[in-house]
Length: 124
Picture 1 (cartoon, helix red, strand yellow):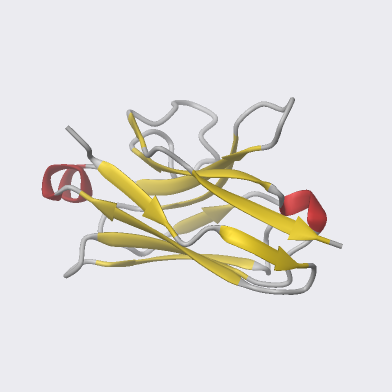
Picture 2: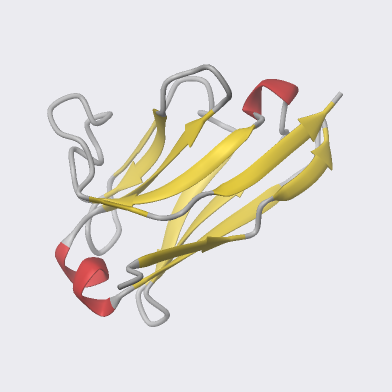
């Protein structure tokens, strides 16, 4: 049973923008806070952004503050990650996630659900 479905990845030049989308099942969207992770080759999966269930308070990794914005559309049960001023070091597979310590940097708990991931490649 598919719970989280990402879309919107692709290739872009440095300085460009992309918007990732994550469509969630009704149960997940209504029950869990939402966030985004990424994993580059040879590196651990890291939290990028998180948002309280229903919207409101957000958290961002220092590496993306001021460039990335997480948002959600409650009617569409979809979470977005707007990525601006992209850098080559942002290249990674990006995963939508539900649950865990969404606005605390995922320090105390990890997500309960994961999407399949979408690739983002930023060229210099």
